[in-house]
Image (cartoon, rainbow, N blue to C red; front, side):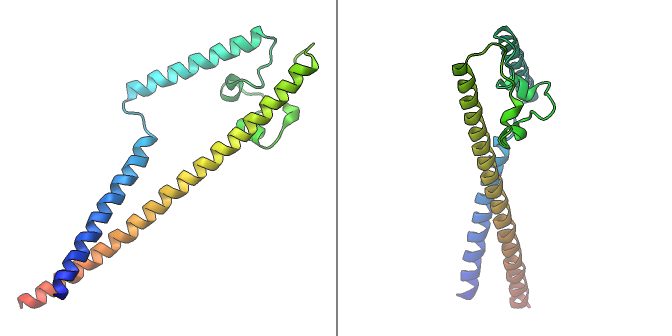
Length: 161
């Protein structure tokens, strides 16, 4: 009866281990491109979008401080996504001749982008911690399953003798 209970416990641990491994694999796949060709196509589309944004910003008067092109492409010193999150409102230079409404709209857009960046950073931290917790749980359960199998083998060897 004791041996049967140990076998059932061992099987349960192995099944849980497989579930955790599958869950970790799903998180791992979420961060990868399916093929290198797909990755290249995505990168090219992002680059084209950045170029279009930069051209549009130049056409509108050089207000590149709020566009993704300036955040991802060539950056001015001190103007990075992390710098924006830190509240560097002074890094955004107003366009020459812009009226007060445009300036207020830019400031609101900048504040919105800062909140979005902080929210994205928080979400990334949460998912990173979840993945680490799952990995730790998986490692603990692997170790428990290993000890249980070793114990079961030693019991089986003793019974065989």
